[in-house]
Image (tube, rainbow, N blue to C red; front, side):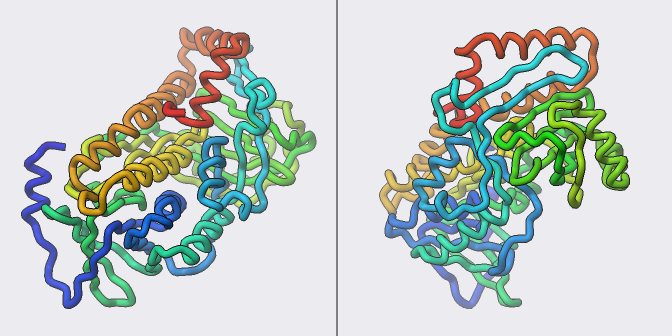
Length: 403
């Protein structure tokens, strides 16, 4: 981001509030990524405030999360992992291309890890993180709707509404971990519309394989079956209009179309839960922090296509790396350009590799170009035959490029 934009932000001031609060770190967004940062810093002695728009109540988010082996290790360090239940393990990942002979199988036993990943409901993770934050020294303010964020020379100024009243918080470091809508108009991110939506639901089948996940590439987009309890969490991508049609199908038609699209690897599909749909795209904020004393995490920094399950896991790594940089920084230097540069440098390789990896998979496999069909098939077959290539890909998926 160019210097003039930062200068404009520094020169703007926020309207006066009767009482101005002060803290070391203000985290905007108490979702899993923001909460992970707060917990990673809970023994730092810093004054940490978490501003969360939702009320202090259990999450009702319908999504399932695919956690990597690396994310499990980080959650274990945060004291969260043993509080998560139910969780299903992934020990095998079967990757295939529709209408093609190419396929690859990744097995945990061949890669010297107990599991390749895990599947759990979003509310299970969020509720465990909420409970841990409440027990920590961080001050979590639920129902706080942030309306403005400004970078000043010596702090970030955050305006938020709580119970109808206006509040202002000055933080040595403001961390945006809520999706980045606050900054999107002033500092537009780079975006790419894949012309795809993802339909998500839970399905059951006749030949369930309890620890096996499936990633299947098709011309209309990838689909994933993630094992959870008695069946699979399904992520089925399709062009926007087609996805809306799929929402309206009867259960019988949906199950028949899914079987036709996926094949016989898990037998006939026998049941489907509530279906929801959301649009997909790539969004990446500028590498340069858009304003002084401000850092971006998770979806505020990058929103990825769900193929290969990289986005959320990258966000948790963002939070952990930022915490390590903060712990290595004197309180008086929090939010300074040197501190922010250290964080950017620590995340650059993992961030760029993750973005290019997911974007490349979507663009290579989500089409029906005849010339690419043998290339895709050969790529999967080659991956399956080369142990060192399997380990490289699996390591990236489990631990990121810095792993």
